[in-house]
Length: 113
Length: 109
Image (cartoon, rainbow over all chains, first blue to last red; front, side, top):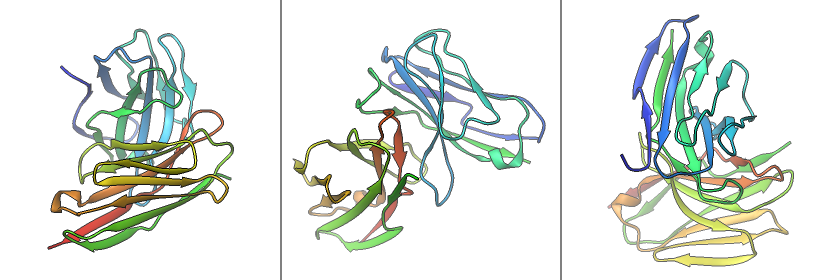
């Protein structure tokens, strides 16, 4: 693989179910991010990680959790999905965080019914 | 609060020039980014400005005025493949990106 991969590509989920969105990068980037993108709104940061073993909250963290056990993987978990979490989710990474360019994965389209 | 404003939609003709404006109010400033996003795809990086002035990269140029909280992206010699959304994002004092809603650019033959 080259770059960032996300899985699944799309998912329909019943409200109340638990769901983990997967993100893997092979660029050895230190920083990783999870965004959601909704029609008419800008990308909104959910959680981020500046380096393996550390995570931080973004603008809209409620209802989501992340972990960063190693450099390559940054899964996003919805503990109990709600319809307002219907969105397109993008994972991104940058070499060292800060002002570095962010590279985006292809996205996961999630529908919560 | 933090705010990034850009036009929702613009239309231009193939071969012409278009300027997409972005104004911002953020807590701190660590640079301004422009990304391109084709429908159904991921955003891809176009440019980064941290100092005032114009940065040119092929057919695309980006301008920044920090005192005015203003940037624009200039696209020359428009091609049909330039039909996409253009996202303006400002890095705030916490080094987090604050994103505008994007400008959908429609290119007509």
